[in-house]
Length: 428
Ligand code: 5AD
Image (cartoon, rainbow, N blue to C red):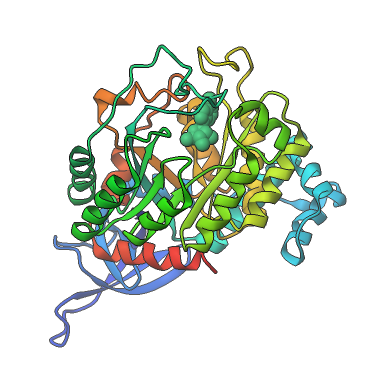
């Protein structure tokens, strides 16, 4: 669930009669650290381990350790002195005050390769400074692709007639979640569907209660527009977070793409969800037809103003059989700049690598986003037989997750506790 930075064993202490655990000293980029070892197998000098708090919990293959270090610790140090001082002063300003709209636009507009390197390097350093050992892996179960909305960008809109629709019944959803938690180590699961009234609030409340009673897992909901009372009941049943994007902060653009909805309603709901104590994941689409850099800047500023805990900003991807099918996809570089600026403005926020970004950048996407300020990944737990039918846009990317599952989804309760602590910090 939470991935930590691997460390190398440099000393194994002599067994002590007072302690049932082996003591070891490990080294990572923070220096030396003494740990108790909860690793059941024999350990040797030079082995790589993963640790949580004061305990080594798992051995890790040297090559995999290197891969994780490259991803999480990759240094993009950059000499700022050669750059336009107007540009670099923005980095200093961000630590002293809120950035002005003009400053954010200056960052978003740059196409100068040195400035871009500097921006990504700065975001990466901020992520490492604030969130060094916190790298989160979430699972998502897309349990229904029915939708009663007509969002113009979405392939699952009720107007898309060529979709093979499916619903997964609550017992099967529970079984999927149970397997993900008990056999694969997931500790945070998003339950997502279209806006599908088949699942009444009551049905979801019962499902959440059952999951929370039997499994140690955080539950995030992504179930669209519902009466706010329903969200309150689901919170009381144990739901921890919501994933609810505002999509765009521009009311005109919003009205164009959501003919039956009102941006103000959505913002009101986000505020109410925050007040209820939900961990709120929200964000926007990048590259919507007609969207300007000024709009994206407003989106970033709105995310900051709303105090969003997890910022999800991904490129628009045109979907066949939708009103926007003929438009180009959102720009990958604009997405990376947005991620980096969000990291500058909101150093402690969770920023996932969105599936949409991975879909336009394929294998490269994960590394690019992580080294530009993102710090979490979302893996798809939807059973294969339904996956292709959850076609919000075409050819969704499903990355390899073996390495991450092996080392990131530790079954230790320590990993759950770590997440609990970090989630609480997200409210600060
Ligand atoms: N391209 C990118 N993202 C999309 N979403 C829906 N349709 C598309 C698309 N064509 C996103 C929306 C929604 C989330 C569940 O999926 O932002 O909030």
